Length: 427
Image (tube, rainbow, N blue to C red; front, side, top):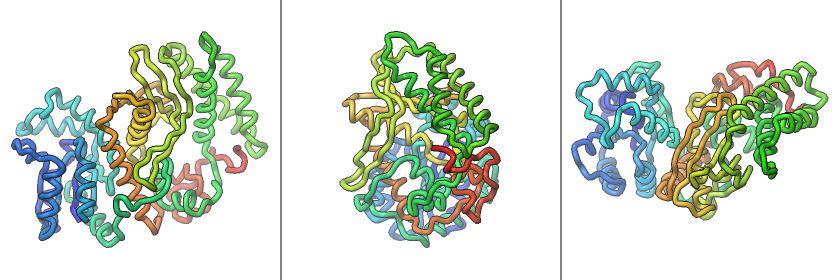
């Protein structure tokens, strides 16, 4: 098994990799170093070299993970029978920039431009890359990071390898894969054992109500804008119809106030100034990844901008840009939605946005036909990580408070959210 260390420049890949190489009696290779020396290193040549060297020694490979051919490299290794264990070294962009600034020996970015813009682009790309293990190098020393990685690598080496490429079967969604990433036991409860959800958090309920209201708002076929009073009345009707008798009046009032305020904010700051023309709403899609393997989802909105660019928009009712640890490759969802739209509409490019309703902030990526293979390979690899897990151990953390199965789990690190609603009370 080959250990890959990926991450931003400044996250400690070289320092940690060299220490791990000593501890594991392995050879340390830097792909980025080879490229900086002018070597012509593509996925085909690199895979051939790694397969040959891994036959007689343990390898630790450092690379950013953001390169266009990273998933192609891992796929080639898998085809050759070499497992890859991908470790993401993570830290805030500000920390990485500070580390870059104090290192005089680092050359400027190969593609030109500033380190700040390079770091932002790399961070966005890395959020499309599934990892087997994540280490926050902002909060631990290189020695501690190395110890944690070595332990995780040893555990993985003793487990069954992921299902081989081409042999995977099934139908998967982002929600399904993200649930497994956050807590394999919750995944087992929901998708394997099909247990009923015991609680719904207020945030979940408000999220559903807001998505219904946005569908009403952007789905209107009138010539002008929908009046705010009209969409707020729709929201009020949905709250009445949705919240059952098991929900207290206090909870109903809290949900009503929060949902109404968020919808008003979106109407005033976004919808009132909207110029893109809606083409489709809640569009279901299926990406065929292999003969018996598909990735499915529902795109909130597809719109045509005045410039003629097709836009894919995913609305989020949470203000959080980043997910909890272990980090979910959250932008892989948006990238998959963009690729699905590219293929369905037969477009050269699309612009995909993640819109945060509470703040009106947007994170955007541009996708072209050349990204289709990269995204498909990343999804296949992520699915392989999920399907190879047969034990589904609990992964306690702060997310336990909002877990729909909290009351039945004996490993919950936190009690259920005090504002959570009984599962049967919502529907």
